[in-house]
Length: 366
Image (tube, rainbow, N blue to C red; front, side):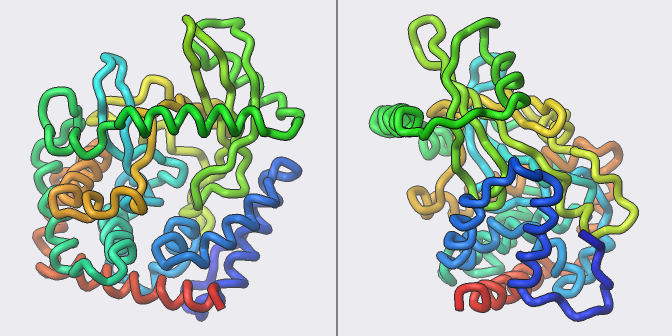
């Protein structure tokens, strides 16, 4: 997929989708899950927020024209595909409940401001116009500045009581998680899993040599089309679940000539200021992670109010700082850049990005 001419008009959204999916087909070959692309297309019609989640490559493609002044901001190892649902919980090596960003598939070195912008844009779109851009931007930047000043993981076992109360999994939700996953495994049609997925999953359990069942899984929005496989074993009398998902180079590398399309997700996920998920690992072009009621993403449909509160948006901004601060020398450079930007830069940019995304969504939904 060639880098576009920055002076040329932006390609229509349907042409952009086709070009990206042709690149996916060339990259994944027979592993591409065509049926999941059909599901993705339907999801993209649901709302501008879901459309944003599903089309990170389009974001990269259009930002130079929508917010050109942000493209020269200092670069860090950034999340890239950031939005209000790209946060969740996991257990760290100490067994503590941790909250933060939990999907780094599109991570790469890019202007730090784009992570803040994409988060703010997603909040505006998820609120259906109910959130004010100044309020959203102010909350995110407040947390981001605090995180830059003192980056540290968001561990919920002692502090952050208000956040723990919001994200803790109820017994009812825990039961539904296991019931849903067990039903999916039982109803899965017979498939022959790719050898690389079986090998990766076989070494991911707490004990080597465990017998385990495998089934394909459909989840997410932006990663639909990439194969995912779940491995389910029984260990010490209870289920142990792992997921292996195919990775592709970050879409940032497709639209920025001269960048090396190496995977950076493992590096970003295990940064200095994060209490990492010990089950998360990257092997070749696969990412393996644990599935459990506590290893989960947040859901704006079920948790919309809390996800868009000022406290939550501030915490999201702080977590972005935890990730950005792992880039050597980034804190001082970013603080200086922020001081030189107008007070309303993020609110203004988020409104422009939301408007552009909504226009793409309307065109796609026709």
